[in-house]
Each structure stands twice: as structure tokens, then as C-alpha cells.
Amino acid sequence: MKLTDAEKAMLDGAKGPAHRKAMELLVRYGEALGAERLVETNSVAGTWSAANPIVRDYAARGMDAVFSEFNLDSDEVVPTPPMETLACQLIGGLDRKRPGVLGIAPETAALNEAGERHFGAKGVAMHATCTPYQVGVVPVFGEHLAWMESSAVVYANAVCGARTNTEGRESTGAAAITRRIPYWGLHIPENRAGTHLVEVDVDLPAEMLDWGLLGYWVGEAVQDGIPVVEGRLHGRPSLIHLKHFGAAAASSGGVEMYHVPGVTPEAPDGESAFRGNGAPHALRYGAAQRRWAYEALNGSARDRAVDFVMLGCPHNSVEQVLRVVRALEGRRVSPSSALWVFAPRALAEVAEASGHGAAIRAAGGELLSDTCPAISRVVPKGTKVVATDSAKQAHYLPAITGVQCWFGSVEDCVDAAVTGHWHGGVA
Image (cartoon, rainbow, N blue to C red; front, side, top):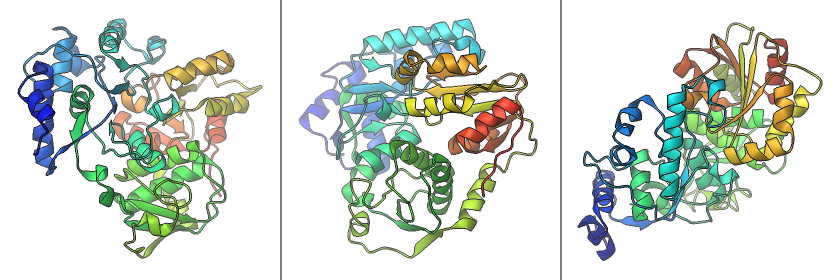
């Protein structure tokens, strides 16, 4: 790799052992990818947490040992230096304010607090969400990032027009202190051209369920390609629609970017989306494809008695939390079920100040933050059947926790929480 003088100096240890270890990692990583150089970044979204069984043994030796092993891939323990970029903590394994609701042991919660204090003091912003773009970490067009988390990456690339690949804990840890990441993949403009044309031949209403279904089918169809979505979209999609579309496409496939001509910034029109390469033969998304996506997402479900309803993956906006509150109005969660609603830490505070948390708890549910069942691997004790409005959770939860899972609208899910039974469906 071709390194600048400043990068060579870090590699030689001029800025200390942590920077040396970080540069060694980035050079190994870049050379394995075939990258010719590094690129500067000032936005990193990763994880510096200490609250999981694997990390716990290292945490007993101090948080510097956690940082060295898990953020720098270093057997040598080096002091954690200050972060040199905007560094955002992504979603973690527990809700720091309500760990008991999730059944998290007190010692694990204490370890999480110790990790947040240590890394927070070093400059990591403890947003604890998979949707940093909802809480102020909003990249600008063309900005190079080093982000983890598939749904965050696809949103940053497609909707913001920023440039990132799906990074890992080690590469983001190294990037946060060196301000560097290998220049490859979606950092390169030519690699951001559309690869598949998707023609939507069925009316797509302003409903996140339908954007989740479309995303799930698109991900299965294009895998790690870059879809260009046109057709009967019926209005301009919102942040909520686009985040659910991207999260679903990144779950069923490996989609890290997409274009919606006239909506996403790198595609003012279809020709721009393909960067002049010409559109390939169109993939058609119609009634049959929509039905396939719905049945695939509900493929694990057999029993209609629902034990647990999970809402908020990717993390809910305050608007989405309010939608749950309105669906619960005058109703109460069944004694045979549980309702957990997840939002980013910062937005959960707004929801609490707006009375939404109290309304959900009064109805027998919980407003939680910082995590989700797929990350924490926690569901209420005895859960066998889950209902969710998230295509991503419906894809992962059966494999991770062994539950059956129903997928549907917010209202379908709230109804399941209230009645204890699944009555949802699509026309």
C-alpha cells in the first residue's frame, strides 16, 4: 500500500503504540482487500462495549485490554488513546436504564457502565443505536465513513450519499484513532453504479410494511448488488420507509447501497443511477413477488398464540413510538403476551418527555433503548412465538433464538399484543 508520510509515521510508532497497532491492522486489512491506499475519515460508527461473555474475561484485566484485543486485534495491551474522529457507539447488548426487564445480571450491567465511562472519556459518543443518522450523526454527501451495522451502512450510502463499506469492530476501532480506512469498495465512485433495475409493478403505499416486503424481495433477488428501484412508488418515501427498505434488503441479501431515481442523491434519474452503463434487464416486483416476501418472512410461524411482540428494528423514531401509543389507546397488553418497543437512547428520552413511555407502560408494555432482541439474544422467558413489524428481526430471530415469528404492520402487532393471538395478513 502507498502510505503518506503521516501514515508512515504512525506505523513507525511516532504517535504511540495504539496508533502503531492500528496502522498495522489497517495495512494488513487494506492489502488483503487489494486497496492501494488509505482514505481519511472523520466519522466512525462502531462498538467499544464490554458487556458480553467473550469480552468479560478481558475486561477483568482492564478496559485497555478490551480495546487492544477487540478494537485493534492486538495481543499486546496498549493504552486507549483519545478518539480522533467523530466516534459513535452503535447498538449494544442491554438497556442501561432497564437491564432488569431484559433479565441482564447486575454484574453485566455494571461492566457495561464501566465500559461506557472508559470509552466515553476517550471521546466515543454513547448513542447506543443502529440508527445514528436519527440522533445527529448525519454524514454529508460524498463523505468517507467507517461504519459498522448493515442497516446503518446501507442508509448512509444510499440516502445520505456518503461512502462506506460494512466495517468490523477492529477496523472501526483503528479508524477512530488514525482517521484512516482502506480505500476500496464503495469508497470508489465507479463501484457505486447500479447493477440491477427493479421495476415495481404493484402499488407501493406509504406504509413501512410494504417497504419492508419490497426490500426483503430485492435483497434476495440481487444479493450483494446495487438495485435501482423505479415504478409505482406512489409518493416520496420517508426516512422510515427507506430505513426499513434498506434493513430488509441487507438482511435477505448483502445490499450495502441502492438508488431510487429522483429520491436518493446519486440518482437524479435512472441514467445517473447506472453511471451511463445502461440499464440491465428489469426485475419485476409484482403481486406474486410481494406475496413471496410475506410468506418467506412468516415462514417460521405456525402457532397463532403470540407470547412476545417486538417493535423497533431499526430503532424507532419518536413518530413511530407515537404510532404504537395511538394503536394502544384504550387497550391493554394481554397477560399472556409481552410488548417491547425499542428506540435510540436519545429519542427514548424525547418519547419519555412526551409521555409516550408512560402510556406504553400504562398499557402493560415497555419502552426500551440501546439494544434489540437480535443483538442481546434476549426475549421474555418462555417465549415461543414472536410478532414484529421488522423484516430484519423476522429474518434473524428464528435462527438466533429458535422462536416462531410473525411479520406484519404495527397495528397487526399491537393487536397481537393485546389479544395474545396473531390475526395479521396482507391482501
